[in-house]
Length: 475
Image 1 (cartoon, rainbow, N blue to C red):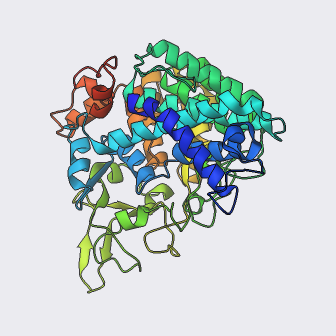
Image 2 (tube, rainbow, N blue to C red):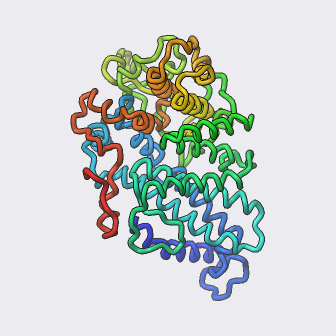
Image 3 (cartoon, rainbow, N blue to C red):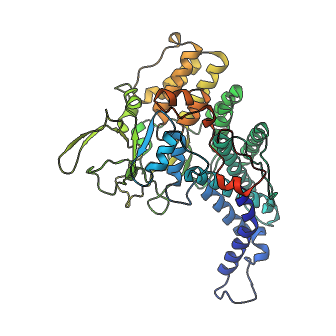
């Protein structure tokens, strides 16, 4: 993280130089006549907008190949549903799956770095936004920046626990970690402030909205077991009357269905530069679908695929067998080799797809409120109804209140979340919240899994750069 602090000044200088160069045709001219002079770029609406767009890019994990996919690795590869084998990514994936990862793991470092890059940009933005004389949508933009910063601390604390809390554009050179309680209170307060500033609707579908901030706040409360706050915030989203369950689970994730009312918060991906590469990583060798498939292969455990009810429509995304282009039949189920094709784009360009990456869906809010209500009061008809609304779309029979205790309903909601949100980077957090993360790993033979693995290690490069930064226990 100290590496990131050292780059604040250099980063600002680079932005100033680039902006100045763009302001005139001859970069050698000494006089600058328009509004993009280096001295005022961060007091200018367009310069500030460029800085906020940069923060959006880091927040969406779009600055490097496979970044959004690496987020899924961190959230699913250590769990009971997903594994990756083959290709250049195989060894790094195996370390996550076998709990042999350490502070040198590149993907862990990449996720850590992306969060701090986004925090740096939002700190600079928030420190300068009031200096712009005219700035339409100023309040909304401040809300967006606060949301991005809060989201990064939400992710950092979820993955790494205690980290430095930096809100200044001129931070200390060697910061120490902040207590977890302080970080959590900051995340909550920052999201509450963002909610007050953000509109329910944005002109651009992918800009952050009030619903997105409420959604992340719901998940923050849920993961920190603030059950009443989680239940209340989920209800606030429901009461917006803006979001709904999309009627067709299969169509929900289609490449041409990006703007449906179930997506509360999503990463926008396109068939150029920042595309979704799920199919290339999931299609097995010799599959007849045109387009590339990588040597790295995304697979799902048999036990998870077999846990679905045979009538569950959510199971239909799994490829469990296929016939190769050479006519050879291949059985995938039974070999821990089933493939999730949740993100399907028949018009992909090379390996790049248009399917957006959902971060918060309305189904998540319904199941989150059901979980919180159960933790508060045990099984209630309202909680059962919320769960059944999600099950109904999947084509399943309703569950019945009389069949559950508080403990058994807790276990069922965890299963329901697995069936609903596989391939959406949710499973690790759900298992940890339910106290089953390490237990599950040991049950499937991952003997290296230890209690300290509920946190990832601070990247070694950051430990080396900052003498005040302590490594997480166990690493």
